Image (cartoon, rainbow, N blue to C red; front, top):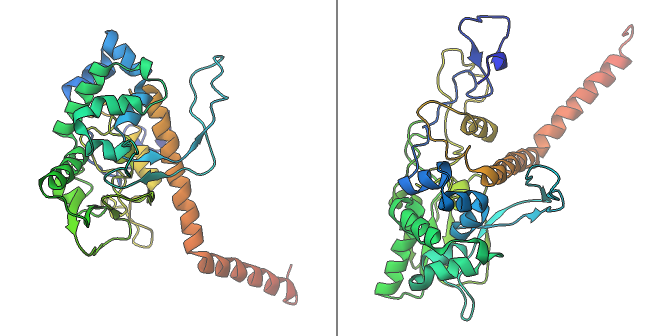
Length: 339
């Protein structure tokens, strides 16, 4: 960070401390590892394939996203008279459907990892608005990359193989939110940590878990607090399926912590940490151009949604506080001799 962004500008200037990036040391998260070689080439090189990928990066990401974005994009701001801008209107959400499409319907999003994979590349390109902008060879290489490295792609491949081996009517796929590892040290889950196949009755241990039916017309909204909320939507920003924000991550003990204050990581702190440039950390996020803009907007809507949710959950407490302050003010005004 810039030196002038340090905390307590007039104290300890020889050993500056920074608040925005890491909460003066209390925010500890694992650094993002370098992306696979193919993605490094497409992001950082300057040949024909790289330029095509960089120019249409949002379309490429949309082709491989596991979830559908539920936001209205305002395109009026991009009129050619300024830098590219990503702006949305209204509330945003990420949704997921069933493992297989309904009869007669084309596969979409996560279904593309399971259904008709012999024509996966054609199905992915066919699903976007301007297919002529897309290089099918790049799509094929990205598909192979994600199937090799991305833990979510592997979990859906597991479901595909189970459906092919012995079709089961009541087979379901549970997308698991909770983790048992320390989120300050680990963010690369295994297949068994992110998904589980279920036959018969469903016993979900977390209200944030998503249960995908074999076939259904229903779209389910994924909670902003689901650990994989962002990696489902941005597989080309998190090519390994890295965990996103986790509500159970504790602050690092810096010796200056106050036990009366909260000690859990917030969404704002997670985003601030991820938006910094650090030594030994991959620049996959920061070098993803228009997709990075979309990610930042999406992250901010996560933050606002959680703040509104907090207000909704704590209405009684918040109203009591306001009532208490009002009563105290009224008491002071009625006391004899009060000013």
